[in-house]
Amino acid sequence: MSQKHVSHNKRSRGKARQARREAREVREMLTMPVETRRGADRRSAQNKRTLIRGVCWLGVLAIFCVGGWMLVHKAFYDNPEFMLKNVEVVTDGTLTKQEILKTAQVPAKINLLEIDLAEIDSKLRERSQVRNVRVQRKVPDTLEIMVWERTPVAWLGFQGQGLDKRQNGVLLDEEGVAICCHTLYREFYDFPVILVPRDVMSEQVLFGERVDLPSVKSALELVTLWRSSTPDPSVQLAQLDASRHYRLDVYCDPDLRLVFRPENLPGQLVKLGDAIRHASHQNRYFSRVDLTVADNIPVIYHDDGFSPELHAPSSDGVLQPVPRWQPSSGINNSLSEEEFEAIMSVDS
Image 1 (cartoon, helix red, strand yellow):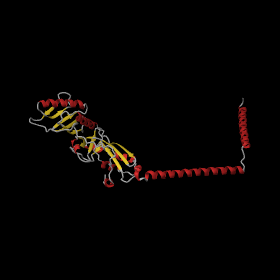
Image 2 (cartoon, one colour):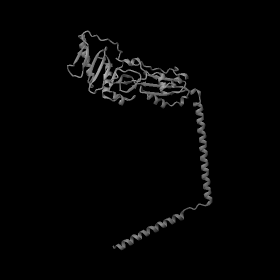
Image 3 (cartoon, one colour):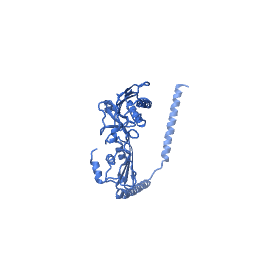
Image 4 (cartoon, rainbow, N blue to C red):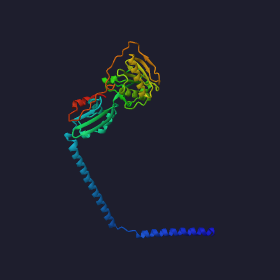
């Protein structure tokens, strides 16, 4: 077939499609309903009635909502029976009720339902000494605050600072979390000091965060093991130099220096206990013991006549804070308005 006949057929098919499209549009125009003026007015009036009906229902609903809110507010928020009258504080550590309320910033004159529990929870968790918190309402007038504290086991210091045990110093719990010492209790003086380089203290120690140093972890492990399996009850840990990653220099009270490898601390403690018992049979006392050597442990004895001062350790080797769990037996543990204002007026 020639090129001329092909192009002629294409033009013919295109004209046929256009004719069918025009015919379809004409049929649609002929079948389209024609709305009269009266029908248009009727439809407009119906739309207006529907709109007015919807606005009326919305108004009724708004009146019910406002009335219900006013009734609830009057029944609960304006009801003097729901005013905060009692604050029960329960803690398992050394924090006092005044310290907890000061940190939580609980106002004295407030409705129990208006207290923001999440805000109180957040403020208490900002304190490095706090491990967990639960705050809940006890209708009609009681707020209960339960605090679980981190238990410190050692101090953290830097070289050159020495045995610095002071208020606002750095305490460590068994997990290595840094705790700010807000109140210096007597039992805290019995905790040993873990020493690290000064730049570590300034760059890597944040209150409420774990001190992520292998040497500090080893030192804390040794403190924990010492509490549970003390080789000699008369020997107390005083200072652990964790500035070197390959060894721990431990200074004990009375005059005794120990050197540990960071790994296999339980096995080294067993060897130390055997060596101390062997020396006690000869009425000798060690001045220095190097436990980094696997066999033939090097030791240095005190001179003849040396007699260490004996200590009376606690049952677990370290004195612990006295727990202050208090039962919620209906006793009014709340502070007076004067005590509230006095606590809130003191700067943190």
